[in-house]
Length: 108
Image (tube, rainbow, N blue to C red; front, side, top):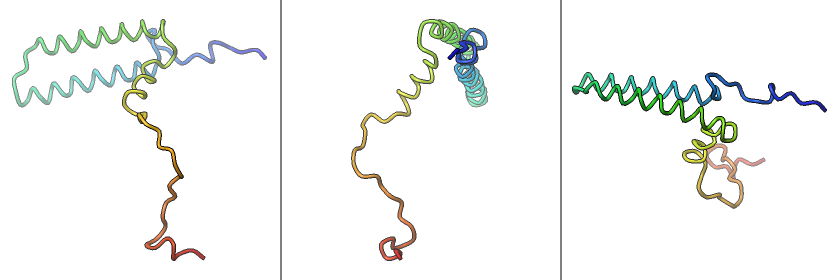
């Protein structure tokens, strides 16, 4: 059976996976909004904005490099492993949801 490599690859924009680019853009927008809200309360030096922009550019270049050298979906896999996946597996019976006030007495 013939496989098409262009169909099997994830979508890429600017040399990186589309999902990683979405995270990068979301991080940039969030950091600028956070700095804007903080700027209303306290005076923030302009160098902080420059540092945020330089960090974003560095992250963009780093993600482009990782896209070329690591497995597809590297960033999403790392984020999932670091923040979402549990560290221990719970082994035991599957908990069943209780229906009503007294689930034992409601059986027919």
